[in-house]
Length: 276
Ligand SMILES: Nc1ncnc2c1ncn2[C@@H]1O[C@H](COP(=O)(O)OP(=O)(O)OP(=O)(O)O)[C@@H](O)[C@H]1O
Image (cartoon, rainbow, N blue to C red; front, side, top):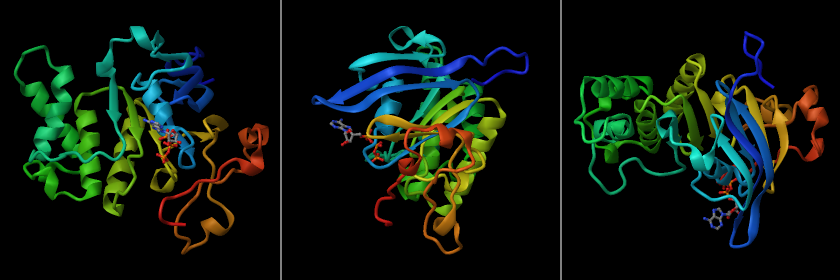
């Protein structure tokens, strides 16, 4: 358990208790229990179809549980109302869709929940949007149509939209998927700042890559179950050699969590679509 400097345990941002989710009768989350203290930066890793996105959606009540319980900031999900605290970046959506919106317009939409009902955007909204654009390195593209941007830049727009609402708790589903190196660097810097500011960040990743130094903890899913929860696995051996195409997270044999896990040899077998 994470402990604050006062010695008291840190309050939990997320708590899933024996969570089960089924689609059409097929169990895709099979008894997941994870406590995420406020202020932690946690990666959820696992092979394709292991249930990562489903866990994110269940944590936010987007898909219902078959059984178990979810609490957000100590409140059972069904009673949770403080959604302004939560910033969600969904998986693989383009920021603009078919609508010819500018970067600023899309990011400004992240302020709607933070505004008082029926009030027009004010100075605080403009400042929040400016800061969010700055944080993801897109201040100079504010007037551009999102359709002109690269996939990685569009991903940054979605993150800026979440930042603009000034939540303290982020859920990001594969923010690095299909993102170019420049945008990966910008995202890594944004996440470092979020971590330094005490925000909670839970993000789905296929590989740690440039976020390796930012991630404090990794939860690895396999077949809808947690098979590792602890120190992020380090790339090693063949995969760590220069010239290797990608970095699969591998178990660190020296990590105490790895030694305690159910099946160390099978811990992490990640697939990266189209690259293996
Ligand atoms: N809405 C849905 N209806 C039916 N089955 C679904 C639905 N969403 C996901 N699934 C199935 O549930 C399983 C877990 O999917 P999920 O998207 O949570 O996995 P994932 O680990 O995030 O995978 P990926 O890395 O490919 O995004 C998969 O077998 C998937 O096909």
